[in-house]
Length: 237
Image 1 (cartoon, rainbow, N blue to C red):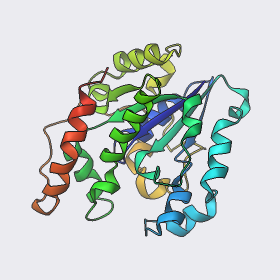
Image 2 (image 1 turned 60 degrees about the vertical axis):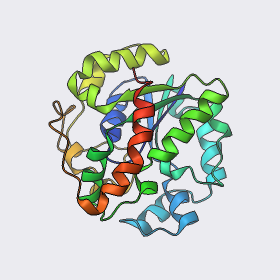
Image 3 (image 1 turned 30 degrees about the vertical axis):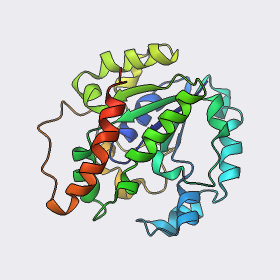
Image 4 (image 1 turned 90 degrees about the horizontal axis):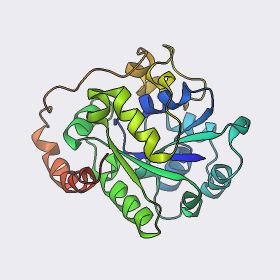
């Protein structure tokens, strides 16, 4: 089985990758389309040159790899994907052979976290519109997409991960609740910029507090993202 986990940035996505990577039966891959996305858009992200050098820049090559054999012949392959990377020209046909899961988080939390690492995010940067589009596409061809909210995972990691495993047909394993401090061997090259908090963790952080204040300058981004989030939230586990 191939598991494609779709989220925007700053959305518990790395912790979820570590959870699946802690299983003995699961390979992982970290944002395989990132270099292709940067090459195609010309965007200037942190560590741009290192990312371009570390991954294939041809999205067709990436798609062929994702459709190929699971690394190490493991039963499960967890693929961490950013929805904003799926721009026109990036293939989507390979998605039909995967179990597609959508990881959501309230946009106020995403915007506050993202802006601390890269200033003035746009709606396209945080991926809510693209996430809803991909969800509709998977539904359209009968792909039975699953939605899970990062807020619920942090409230009760064991219960929510067990629900997720049941929904996608993966045996539950308590190994998913902890991982070694210091990162994972399959982290993307950009991990040193983005993954500091997760590198210092050995499991999921506790429940989230109140929603953060979003700066007035980013309120239009929040207002635009909220309807996409609310629509996805209605379908969550």
